[in-house]
Image (cartoon, rainbow, N blue to C red; front, side, top):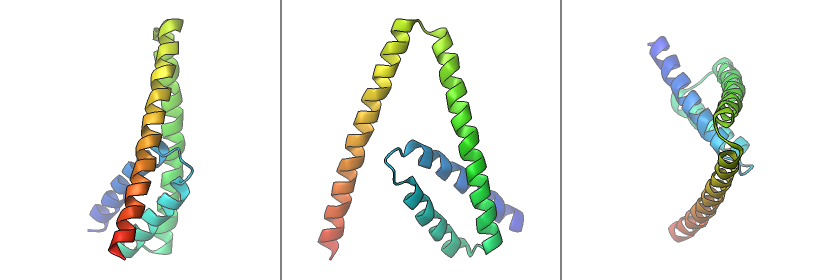
Length: 117
């Protein structure tokens, strides 16, 4: 039972760490803390488990960052300079689109909160 619970927590933490990496809006710390608080309450995590999960999150965060950088370098090695420039432009367009989506979501969430009061 404990192994199943720990495995579930690890999967959740790993998946969540990926989401945090995708969040480049400066709120990832808050989001992580809220998620940990939720997991602590729902799973009744001990202080030791919370510390272990935090360490695991940091470890995976660094590994994912390194993997992403390695992947990007390998892709760039295959592409021509013109293709690299276009790829950079595509990434920037995606960032802008995600930023717009994020801001709209925040507005909608604030509007929903206002309506529920």
